[in-house]
Image (cartoon, rainbow, N blue to C red):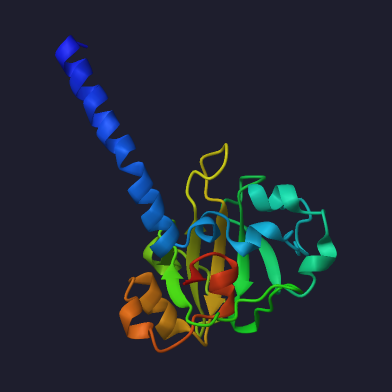
Length: 204
């Protein structure tokens, strides 16, 4: 690296660092701040239910929390662990039934007074059919969506949260969210599970 290119690199880096306060302030004001980085689901242990294979575990941060206080998650949702890769021992995904979701005791996503809905800029929602063509459909009336929150959020450079959301009741709404067409969905409060897993939060 020549002295000129080094100087240019230093100056560019300095400009980026000078802009960090504005970037952080914008993220706190309009991007959900800490709630977007650490959604509520990361604060509660995950209840694992797998009748077929007890060896299947949920990996990442949620797995490390499992067992701390299982009673807190007793009523969160009916979930089961399914393997994304039949040959992998630890590659797993959590399937959440949106239509019957119940949050844990003590948790609430009630809209605060004058609260505004904020979509997490660190979250990505996509219809499962968009990334795979070999889905085994058990119920054609239901559709599945994959939600990833905070990519590279751990030492394995994976998402902090990765869940598969299954629904029949909210298909039209979820299709809009997956297309980031939130404007047409403003008249409807998102389902509670989308607050719990970090796609949305309430701001001021």
